[in-house]
Image 1 (cartoon, one colour):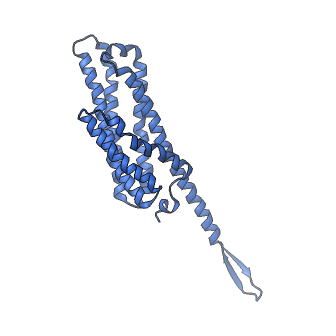
Image 2 (cartoon, one colour; image 1 turned 120 degrees about the horizontal axis):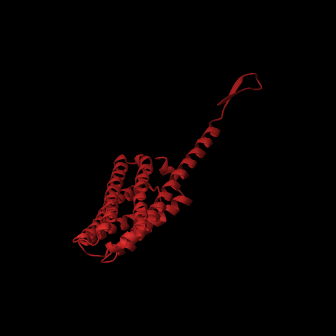
Image 3 (cartoon, one colour; image 1 turned 90 degrees about the vertical axis):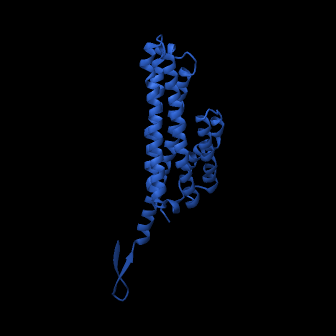
Length: 246
């Protein structure tokens, strides 16, 4: 906006309100930055809760050697657990979608790679959840020959799909953390923790697939990144200059 004012010699001068406009835009960008930061942070925490609680409920039912005979009395818990695990599908896709415009300012390839790996991950996790849900109708035939074996195969299918999904996530997250480190969207020490944690996670998933049950311990470094990151985003947000693509 430009105001016209008369000077002492009768001439018209103009006074620009550009600084005021700039401040308004700065506040708008800051609000957008914190909104995106907090939404992404919230999705990380929601994903932890939904999949973690759901997986805990399911594991409590299918962890035994003769679990199929007891499922009929607890199938509601199994369905609720599987549903909570399935909710993680929308959460992870939303993370990739929200991250996309932020990452695209620095590297479209990284933005696309991260979104693609998130989609592959949720497809694999959904296959695992579907296998768990098939246990419900199978439980009606618990006394028949081969039913328990088939039930065990369905449980193992979910476990394998989970490991493959986490392996895919780990690969995509390495590219994410490399960009976060380079652009300093978040502190470099936090990005480095992800660069350490996710390759270790990938190694753990491969070990689990080959029958070496050490994956739980190898998730700890990656768990640190995914737990600290959301709290950082809640309170600090992405670095303003990097968020704007400067």
